[in-house]
Image (tube, rainbow, N blue to C red; front, side, top):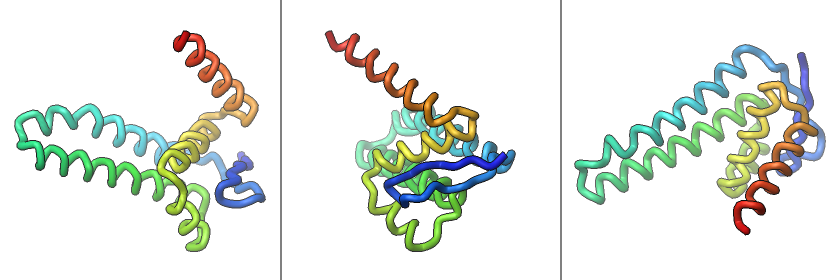
Amino acid sequence: MTMKLYIKALKRKPFEIKASTRLMMAATKMQLDQANFEKNLQDKTKDLPEAEAGALAMQGMLDSMQSQIDFITDTLGLDDNLQDKLVELEPAEVSEITVYITQRLMGMSDADIRLAQAEQEAGLVQTEH
């Protein structure tokens, strides 16, 4: 099944991708790698000097950002121009694009995603009061 992904931070026209098993596996692997890094970071750094622990954490952050860049680039088939545009975005924007692509691959429509975001934002507002 081909789907259209609207990512205005990169281009006006939608990207068309096929929701293949390969892409689902890539999305799942990226998420699993990030979850495992976060889970194992404390165990790996608890007995290290502060500077070494900090370096390990920074390497993990760098690996995570590169993983997201690679995932987006491969999934959308970005050319060099669009990849340059991607790496100039703020890290939070790159994360949002990664989450959006993953949600779409999991079968959510743009309307479903907007509704989930609105519900999450409403929940955050309620918990702040």
